[in-house]
Structure formats: C-alpha cells, structure tokens
Length: 289
Image 1 (cartoon, rainbow, N blue to C red):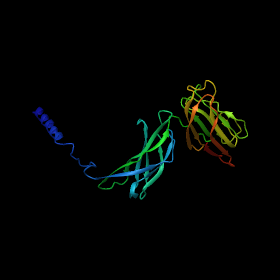
Image 2 (spheres, helix red, strand yellow):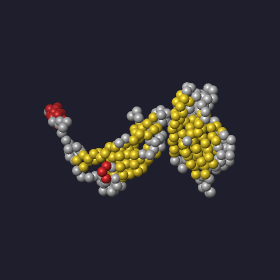
Image 3 (cartoon, rainbow, N blue to C red):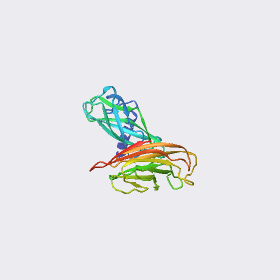
Image 4 (cartoon, one colour):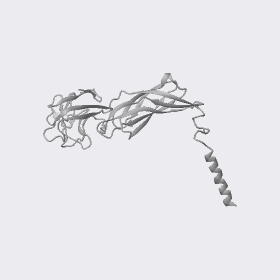
C-alpha cells in the first residue's frame, strides 16, 4: 500500500511539471504582471586614462527629464576590452533629480596597452512603483588602460612614474630631469614591477637621482639609454606617466615614442612645478608637454 501511495505522488508531480509550458506566467514575476519600463540613460566621463584601483569620474543622466519621488541607485559596470574582468559601482540619484555625478572603479588591463568600457547596467528603486518594473541601459564610454600598477600615496611627496612594456635592465629608457638650480640628473632606479620613479618631497634639501626637494620647475625628458638597453631597436615605444599627489590624487598620461632606439634623443614629456606655501603643503602643478 505504501509503495502505491508513493507512486501516486510521483505521478502527480509529473503531471504538474508537464502542464506548464514555456509561455506560462507565474504570479510575482515582472513579465506579464507589471509594465516593463526601459530607460535609455546617458553616461559621460572626462577621464581618458585609468588604471586598476583608480577612480573614474562619471555623470549619469536619465532620459527625458525622468525623475523619481525617492532615491534610486544605478549600477555602473566597467568591462575590460576582452570581456574578462569587470568592476561594478553604485551611484544614487536623489529624489526629484534626473542625474548624478560621482566616481566609479576602473577595471585595468591585462597588457600594457588596453581599453575598458563603462555603461549603466541596472537600476534599483528605494520605493517601488506599483505596477512598474524598470530596466536601464546606456551608451558605452571607452577609457584607455593597461597593466601598470598605481604608485602608492605618501603624504610627504609627489611621485612621478615612467612605465613602458617589460621595464627591466636590458629593456630600458632614459629619463632625464632638468631641475631648478641644479644640474640635470637621470632617474637611475628601475623597479621590477614599474619602471623609473622619482619623488619630489614637500620639504627638505635632499636631491639625488630618485629624490628632489627644491621648489621650481622640473622638466622630465625621455630618450635612448645607450647600447644594449633595448630588446627591439626602432620600435614605436608606448610609455605611460603615472603621477601620484600627496593627497592621493592620480593623473595618467600616455604617449608613443616613434622609431625608438638606444640612441634616440631626449624629448621633454612632462613639466612639474613645485610652489612652496608658508606653513602648508606645497602646490604641485603638472603639465603634459
């Protein structure tokens, strides 16, 4: 008797499963029970280059002056060019507003030169509107990126990093600095995971190939590093400048030195001005040349 009862239950479950076709709607699902509202938002950014861990400024605007009576959260997805690797960030649009400006996380790259796209991918209402379910999409914006690491923040100095593909002894570039009131000097250190790095301290009197302190203008130039310093001669060499301010702000500049060889002449690529402020952190002004 018990076996017959179990068989009957299984048969009943089977009938229940086959009675539901793929076109059936279930109570509680958005489709078929509420109106689906698709929003085509706009995303913009003033950031051209960004590395993994860096903040990217974004502005999200809802279409046709669309506003909500309560706060809504929008999701921004940064997707690596090859589709492998992404970050998600969330910004809140206030009641009665149809746009928000904030920051989103960069995703970085697998190789020295790459790109990622940022777009709006989801929306969440703090107060649900009865009978409506919102979806959102946006245009993609493209940002240059790469596998270079960000320099760490140190409150007592500005850091300037010069990176290029495979930055090792035997594949190096020369970085020369025209310093205020001092003779020109070359940045002589090459780190295993970056390239050449120079620091300008907020205060002090030390001036070496890796540290400067004097106020005034610093002109950074790059060129060939002499015989045996390159793996490939005559290449179009991409390079990246990473500037980390004492307050953690980051600037990224990129360029390509055409036909780069071990004897390529020095060309100026960056100007940094240190302006001392009485009883305060000096002002650092950075200009791409």
